[in-house]
Amino acid sequence: MIIDFHTHTFPDNIAAPTLDKLKHLSHTHPFTDGTGSGLEASMSAAGVDYSLVLPVATSVRQVAHINDASAQLNQTGRKLLSLGCMHPDYPDWKHELDRIAALGLKGIKLHPVYQGVDFDDPRCLRILERCGELDLLVVTHAGLDVGYPDKRNVTPAMIRRAVDQTGPVRLVLAHMGGWRCWDEAEQLLADTGVFLDTAFSLGELTPLGDGYYGPADLKLMERETFLRMVRTFGAHRVLFGTDSPWGGQAEELARLRSVGLEADELDAILGGNAQKLLGI
Ligand SMILES: [Zn+2]
Image (cartoon, rainbow, N blue to C red; front, side):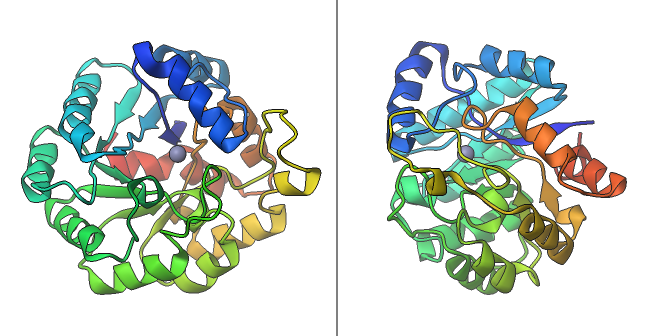
């Protein structure tokens, strides 16, 4: 089974303008039209069985509405599964986390860069703590963000401090533990229980073609570094993710299949680990 653990979709009526805005912010080229059906078309073409949609609340006003829509998506029987969301400034965060669990959502996505809060801030720590108690997964953006390269809200050092201060929680770090902070992630996080997703790690960025990036800016993680990190953390803690629409599912699958992993490592990363985490 192949599960893409890191995807994004937008409501049909705002997908086109949202994608247009985000592609100019990141100067990268999207691989789908950003809608749910666009993602499903990509999944059929690539041979992906399930995609996990990670909604980001960029303001407190969106939280309850996104969680309701995510729960509804999960009722449709489509091969798109959505997590819920939380904003660290949400006033009644505790009640909303209880509601997320009651709605049957498997966890939440945090994006400290877009939410303007540091990951080791008490507003995030209390959410991690409560998600652990409710057995909700927490998936967070980690490291730098391609759209805001100067913002450092979720570095491996901050993640380490957060993990050390909170009770057990199943925590998934996007982008191999910290986008473009990979040495630090490897040094500081390998002896924790965190999971990593592979989104935006191997290979290269796909530039928008607006001349913003030079060739050296496009390079991401080296093959050797990727393999070493998988083996340092253990393949059972690594999850295939593409960040679709910002990564192509077929392209990322091909990269992962040719990177030099053993067959059992590949099976675990492509779907086995996600199956267990999501109870599929
Ligand atoms: Zn993402």
